Length: 371
Image (cartoon, rainbow, N blue to C red; front, side, top):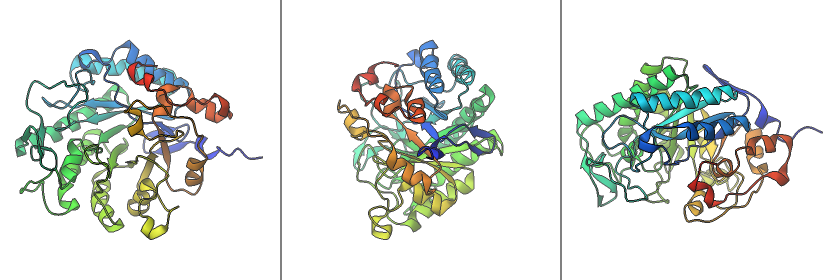
């Protein structure tokens, strides 16, 4: 009998990146880097996932060198000698355990943190908004934008220099890059605004192009994108495949190799009016329309979605047969797992050996510690 999970544990290669399997650890904010500097506990946390068989580890969001790039006090920096030395220890530990890893580089824009922490300078965004009609902080000048693009490029270059295997740019969930995409938060009248999603993607395209120039032609670039925003779960940037092509196509042309397509529930079809209730999900359509490799993500292996986790709700393990159906037909290339790996660093190895009984659900207590 063939192994039903065989394809999940086949290698994947793109450019300089080779993975032993198709399982990706999704980025999950931990807010546990004292003074923004990852320490031994952070390194050990990531090493455990490498030892547990994850193919590619994506770090928690780690912020670029801008004065108000983070919205919580212990989100890690990806700039400055001390923080970069900490990340060097992280990647060395992951490589020692035969893992592969990317930092997710990030700017939180004007999104409020959950704990009431405030940066020491005004937050920034395309138009001084955190959501439609919800003013916060200041609108970025073109000089601010140019400096931000350069900061993303420096972070990516540092990732390569430190020995990371790839880099992910966070362009989803209502944070800075996504605030440029969204008409509700981008009211600019200069070249970074506009009526269309293609117009409003200029900033992201400049970030990607600068990152590509910084890392060279073979170092893979991942871009995380989403339709939904934490400010409004119902928002859709692209209501049709043509609009999705306008949005994502230029970003792939600019240098993105892998689109990390975030849904709250990976099994939901993106355009059911076109291909039905079992149609392609977000990652499937992104791959079809752009030709890029894609990562799918969204409540993999669990009952409740990610929103329920932050409401303190536990989730039970469900297995991954639904993932395999889509992976087997080539809908996407890689599958990202979040909360299941947060609670159980050995989740991937348990799936590989068929230990379904050993798979754990998600316990919200895991958010409070580095398991």
